[in-house]
Image (cartoon, rainbow, N blue to C red; front, top):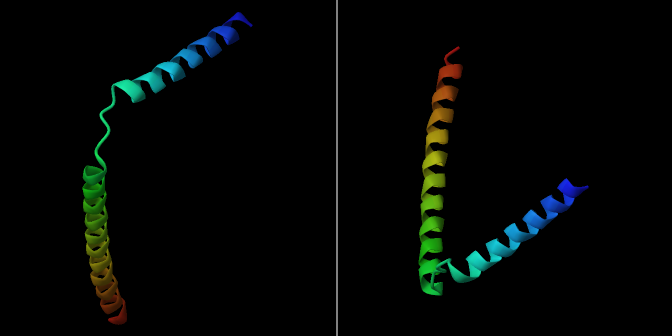
Length: 70
């Protein structure tokens, strides 16, 4: 029982310390910087998806050509 109370005490301290650190020590980005970063990630994701799509289509066509030979 003592171990359980000790665990909850330590868990509570961890949560309280985590919130203090988030409030006092974390440097939060400005809205414009966050917007720019999000736009960059979105554009990079779309480009990456298009590249993967093109590779998939090339591979699909190559396999169809290969299998149609038999």
